[in-house]
Image (cartoon, rainbow, N blue to C red; front, side, top):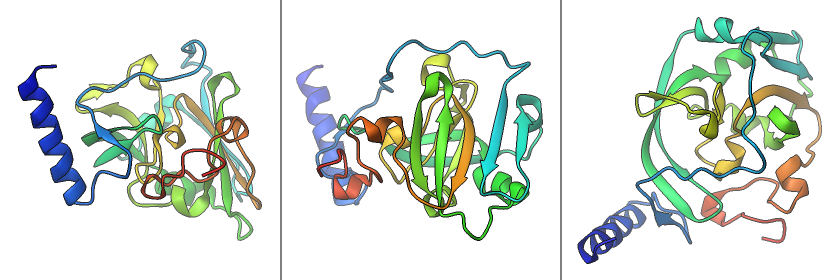
Length: 204
């Protein structure tokens, strides 16, 4: 990085912090770093399903074609990784999680959700966080389809929380009465992950 690029990045970081868009301890990146544990999964779309189960009145498994046929939405937001980078003005193309939850009808007892993904990965969310208007299931970002490294065929995007909560390779939502740690939370990450409170790890 040149001296000019470095000073320009610091100027933009200062602008974003002043605007209330850069959480504490975060730095700006123009790239989209690839971070995951283990190998990128191979997904067979013919047999792949997105399941909603647990505390729902209508347990449902959607095929990829069924999801692609639903009304599409676009959301533009910032993302903040627990490893301290932030990327601004990401434009996601996908479908509304609210729309899917309305179809499966959470029970009155549903308060939390375990998001399940390939290779046994998972992460927990409060149902209220999942229902936020900014949340979607993404097929693509900035006009390009998702790559396998970034979560193809489907990635959850929860921009108000640290980015590990935006689970890659998602294939299931288990609605629950009580909170429980997912894979990442069992391995030291915070149960909620609010970047504005620096909720990175379990002891934060």
